[in-house]
Length: 222
Image (cartoon, rainbow, N blue to C red; front, top):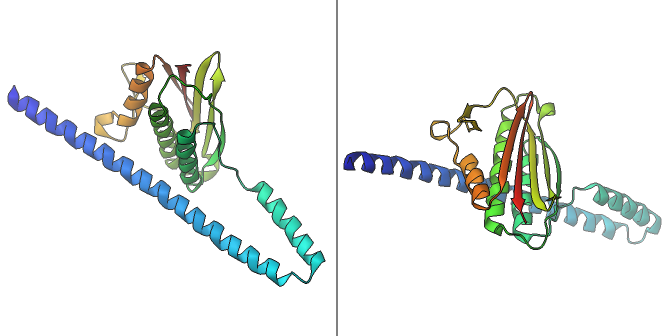
């Protein structure tokens, strides 16, 4: 019995270590992508300054350039501002990475100032849902069919989280629950973490798989 417990413990340790390594890799990718964006902004800013310096003595051309620049800036995607600083950081880093995967994203998120769930738990739920949605989209060969829709807001005096993504084929179910097909014998730690945190906070998880679409809804009491 002791040998079994020892081997079982070793197996769990390896699975947790692999999961943590995967999280670190994802966070590194997100940070690297944000750094690339910052470098791009710095490069564009430098070019704009040089152009405006060259147009200092040409007011009409300067005005035309500034109007064009202003129009371009209004079309740039704005960052998500939910009202929660930690959630903003997670959402924007995830969405920034998702967009590099040629995935169309539609996101709307606002959360009240006072929540019963901790910021850490909320970010774990959102992070895992977006990771799963992104991975499902990446498996689709047709880039035009890749999409993720996110909505976070208050519904019926509860915090409502909805993540919908394109998906190909049927997902695996065990014991009435959808499970990941990628890691740890079919049981993804991400899905389990979402379920356990939601349960801990007296919430509710609903997952639906329809042709070409997978959706997750999470309800958390305020």
